Every structure is written in structure tokens, then in C-alpha cells.
Amino acid sequence: MTREQRKTMKAKRNDALAAAVEQIIADEGLTQASVSKLTNINAARLNQWLKGTYLGDNEKIEQAIQRWLDSRESEAELEGKLPADTDWVRTPSASSVMSALSFAQMAGSISVVYGGAGIGKTTAIRTYQNQAPNVWVVTATPTVARPGPILTRIAQALNLRTTGAVHIVESNIIERVQGTRGLIVIDEAQHLCHRALDSIRAIHDATGVGICLSGNEIVYAQLTGGTRAIGFAQLFSRVSKRVRLSKPQDGDITAILDAWGITDKQSRKFCLAIGRRPGALRGLSQTLRLATLFANNVGEPLSLQIIRDAWTDLGGDL
Image (cartoon, rainbow, N blue to C red; front, side, top):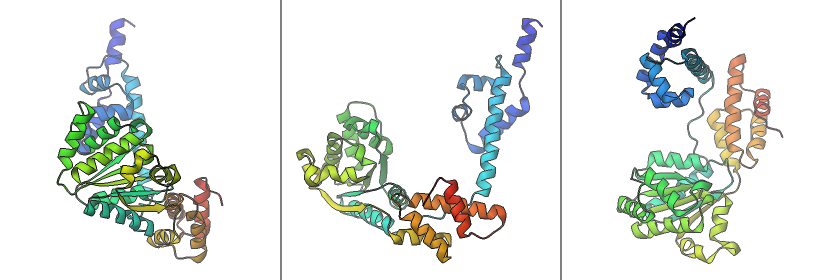
């Protein structure tokens, strides 16, 4: 086989497959860049392949495309079988979080919400954001512990330009939130250093915008008690509402069980044991969702044994 013949064979494209990808892009409003990421195909090569001008190994590209299409079908099939999660449940703990957020926004003050993971803090925050105007949520990570990075995150949440010196970004944030009666929520705030927290305090002082710091026990430990550093005193003095959620309340668990329609006493007892574990509200919801899938697959009502099987399948133990 000549070089030209090999080149011609490599250039031959599966037109039906390309048409299927083009249709997905059009129907779902995707971009070639997003498809490139989803398929792990170089963006330039994908573009050439879609145009029918790629002279490289089309078969290799089409194998990757087919894997992506197959995975989409599998996900759609699972999504069709997997029961939808319950609508957001206003548990007692969630109500406490919502109250702290609402107070901070209405009073233009600072609230702190802290406690263990899996209790529903972040879900309550996102729900409040969807219900109230001018609420901006930023999630801190170890890489944004310092003032510059966290101010950049806040600016991004506000749809502001993030270029320029830190003090310029800060000034832009202050100008944007001034007079909005808004609320800036910093989730996972335990990652922030003293100077980053002080930068947030400065925005509050300059604008009166509400602030809520949410995270684990470290957030509050940094601000109060014997471990409080002098540098945190200015921020602590402005904290007007504090909500501690160390573990799920029984009322949280029963509210979730009611939302799922779990009425059997033995099943509720078992679920209470799951939910009382630290951070287990999230695991309880996942267990009930998987248990409902199991029950639907065998055509049986949800039972204690099926819930036990789902809990075990997710790696749980009691």
C-alpha cells in the first residue's frame, strides 16, 4: 500500500458518527470545546474531524467518540431508573442555617455557621441563594486561603473583572455590592487565613453587605475561645449570629424519612441509627435513593431488608 493510499484511508471519516455528534451539539447547546473535554480529544483534531478534513488516525478519534456516546447512553439509562432525590427538606438544622443567612442579609451583619460535614449546610445555603436576591456564594479551598485568591473568587461570583492588583479587585467588589442589601457567603471558610478573613471584614465594613462564614469547627475556633488570636478580634466583634451544628438532630432524620414516605417502625429505627452518625444525613439520603432503585428493580415495596442492602452496598456498617 502506497503512502497516498494509507493517507486516504486515514482521512476516511465515519460521517454518520460525525452527524450524530453535530446533532448532540446542536440539541444540547454544547460547544466543541466542551465535547473535547468530555471525549479527551484534542480540540483542534476534533474540529478537523467534524469538518471532515482530519488526515490523522480517524479510527482512534472515533473510538473515543463512541466510548463517549456509549457512556451517555448508560448514564441516561441509569438516570431513568434511579429515583429522583426528594425535594429539599427543611429540616430543623436547615432552618437554623436559613435563619442565620436571612439575619445576616437583612441586618447587614456577619453570621457564622459551623459544624460537621454531611449535615446539610451547603444544600441549605444553595437553597437560600435560589430563593433570595443578591446572594453570592463562594467556596473556599486551601489554594484560595490568602486575600488575593479569595477576593478573585468573590469577584467571579459577582461577574466582575478579576485582573489587576488585589486592591483594585477589592475596590470593584465594594463598588458592586454597595447598596444591594446583599449577602456574601463563604462556604468551607475554615481554609481562609487571618488576612483573607480580614479582607472580607473590610468589605463588610465598607458596604454593610451581609456576610456568612460557613465551615467546620475550625471556623469558630479561629474566632473565639482560648485559641482566638488578637488579629481575629475585629472580625469576631462583628459576628452577630452563631449557629453550631455538631451532629444531626433526630428531627432532621425524621423529616427526611417523612419526605421519603418511610412509615415502617423498624425501617425508621434503622434509618435513625444511620442518621445519628456524624455527617450521615447525606449518606441516609443516598441510601434511601439506592434502596428505592433496588425495590423498583424487583417490583417490591421499600422494606427494612432492602434499605439494609442499600446501606451495605454503599459501604455502610452498623
